[in-house]
Length: 234
Image 1 (cartoon, rainbow, N blue to C red):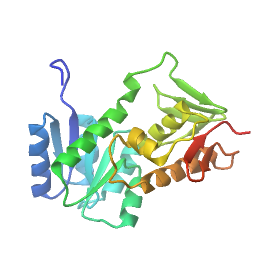
Image 2 (image 1 turned 180 degrees about the vertical axis):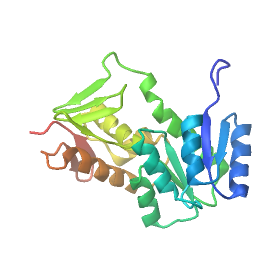
Image 3 (image 1 turned 135 degrees about the vertical axis):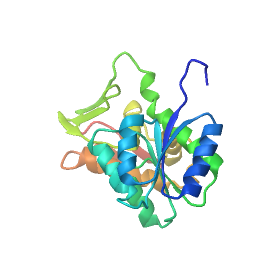
Image 4 (image 1 turned 90 degrees about the horizontal axis):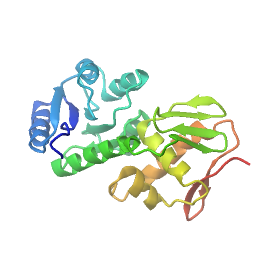
């Protein structure tokens, strides 16, 4: 990190002192600026005051759960990337966390080194807007994506996306009419090896398809055995 850059900010939300203290210590040692919250109410307040670059958010909290925390943040327009951290390990719990608008998911016990690497990947993705083409608006048919304002619309109708859905759509739009494999999408959108689980790509493509194609001529297509392609509706 250059001397004139501020430290990356992370908000750790966990009601287990052993977890939050361990994470805070490791992240500070790695050069992060860290704030800790122990419940949902505190998390929402700290997020507004601290303005973190990324959050580590436990799902099980004493007042309201992490998914409700994220829902409140997103409702207020906060697109901070979120890594869910939880003792729950079932596929259903993972899907619920991602559906709620989370960007990544780790199950306790976890590797501190891997968690920090994932947080850095999330921050890199969220900062891609700093490197812009002169025109920040990408267009494919009647679909538009503004890289500066993070606004997405189809035929002028606004579409609300999570930060991961936004990055996925941006990748498709920058590569319109090009078939992208699941591994290409994992490498570019998730920026690390997601434990080899290409099902996360299928999951997010389905979320994106519901939002941009619902009730309209389809733009996002599956190419059997090859991947996915985005092209203007015919």
